[in-house]
Each structure stands twice: as structure tokens, then as C-alpha cells.
Amino acid sequence: MRADRLVSILLLLQNHGRMTAKELAEKLEVSERTIHRDMEALGMAGVPVFAERGSNGGWALTEGYRTDLTGLKQSELQSLLLVSPTNQLDDLGMRASFDAAWQKLLAASPASIRQNAEHARQRIHIDGAGWHQVEESFPCLATVQEAVWQERALFIRYQRGEDSVERIVHPLGLVAKRSTWYFVAHVDSELRTYRISRLIEAHMLEDSFVRPEGFDLASYWEQSTADFRSSLPRYPARIRVLETLLPRLMQERYIQIKSTQPAESGWVEAFVHFETLESACEIVLACGPRIVVLEPGELRARVTAEAAAILGLY
Image (cartoon, rainbow, N blue to C red; front, side, top):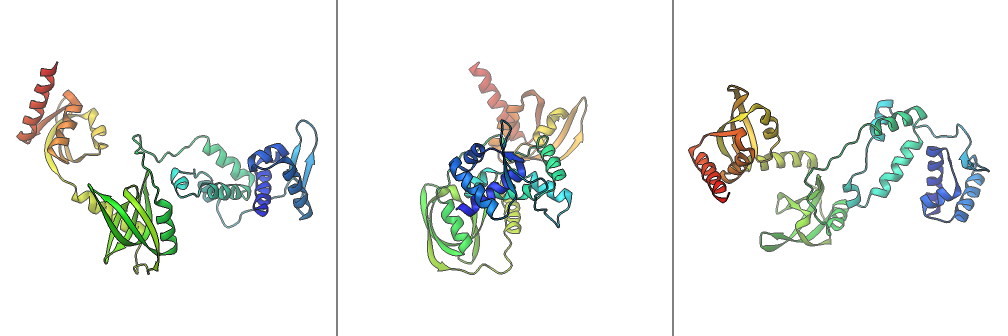
């Protein structure tokens, strides 16, 4: 719409100081002739925009023309200006809205704050993605999102093991855990979590629903995550590990360090929880001579047998 484009032009000029008609046209994906007409419209609306000729010329606003943002502290504004768009915004179709909002916030900020924010953005970058990204597709995400916004019932068919299951659910909220999307739904008087990439199909129904009183999405997700972790299998063991390896083990997904005590010559004894005998054996073998299993004997025997099999291959 033209009104949106005029606002975009105004914000671009406030943020960049001076831009040529060609730069504006490329940025807004219109013709230079359209930009000239838009400039006339801005001028007629009382916006102090003017053109400068020459090699360094372009369109600009009268110096000092700016809408100041009030009610926010300098540190609060800087924290907002440091925010970077994420892939989740792309998934939700909100990237363009984020960019527009960021431009408006930037345009309304005092010059000193804009300079400090740019200084920080060149020195701090927050990457929320893990090293091992899981590539998933979310063809049903838009449908689930719409049902959440409108509080409408949702028919879903999803993959559960080798079977497909059909349900009518009341979607309460979306959760993004790194690059994986989930949605929380009220089903048969219970709260359940579904992984959106496992949805085979989803259709929004005409029926609306009332959200459960007192439901808080963040609190539910935190408790659900804690319950999931506590339900994972536990395989306790006692190990001796090189002290230099301990920080790496503490970041390992399939092991929890419950307690440690100094041993000798740079070694540490630790009581740990693996998930299963198999995962414990894999982790121990991956660490090679930097880790020794003390207990249980079952794990010691398994590691010894696997090591002997490897030796036999070579």
C-alpha cells in the first residue's frame, strides 16, 4: 500500500540521512518514477523533504526532523536495538513485520543511542542455533498458528511411530525450541504437546473454544520440560576421568554429573547418570584413555568387549 511505502521512505531517510531515488526504488522494489511521486506526496503532507543534486546528492530530510521516542531508558532502547531476527520469524511469516518495526524503533531513537547500538551490534552477535541443526519442514505451521490466534478447534493427523493418529484438539500456544516447533493443545481435559513436523495434515474447524483459566504457556513448557527430563532413563555409574575432560562431559547431552571428588595426578572421580548401558558405552569409548569405568561391572565388561572387537578389526 502507498501509505506504508511513504512511511518506509520517511524511516529510511531518517535512519540513513540521504538516499538517491535509485537506492530507495531498489529498497522498496518500485520504479524511480514512483519514488519521485511519493516525494511530492510527502512534501504536500508537510514533511520537510528535499532533493540535492550532484554526485553526492539524493533525497534527504531537513536536519533535526525526527520523532523522538519517550518513556524508555537508554539501556532499554539499546537492548531492543540489539535484537536480531531469527529463523522462527521466517517460519511464522513475520520477518517483514520485524524489519519494519525495527526501522521504526531505530528512526525514533536519539542519534547517540543509534550510534551506541550500532557499535554494540558490530561487537556482539547472539546465535541461538546449535552446532548440529535438525532440518525439519513445517507445512502445517501456518494452519496451527492461525488456529492459535483465533482460538479455533483444529483437526490434526500426525505420525506416531509407524501409525497415523487423528485428533480434534484445542491449540493453546506455539513453542520454538531452537529450530524445532511444537504446539501445546487441550485434548480430552488434558494438556499435550505435539511436534509440528510430525503433523501429516491440519485443518482449522469452525468451532471455537475457551482457554483453560490460569493457563500460562511459559510455565507449562518449563514444567513439561522438567517432567520430560525426570522421566528419561537413568544408568548410574562411577568413573575416573581426567580433570581436563570434565567440562566437556558436563556439556554432554546423554550424561549428568551428579558429584565429583579429587583423585590424583589430574584425575577426578565422579558419580554420573548415563541414559542407558549402550549410550554409556559409546561415550566411554569416545573418550578413549581419558576415562575409566569403576562401576558397574556390567559397563566395564561391555567397554572391554567393544574395545577387544575394535582391536580385532585392526
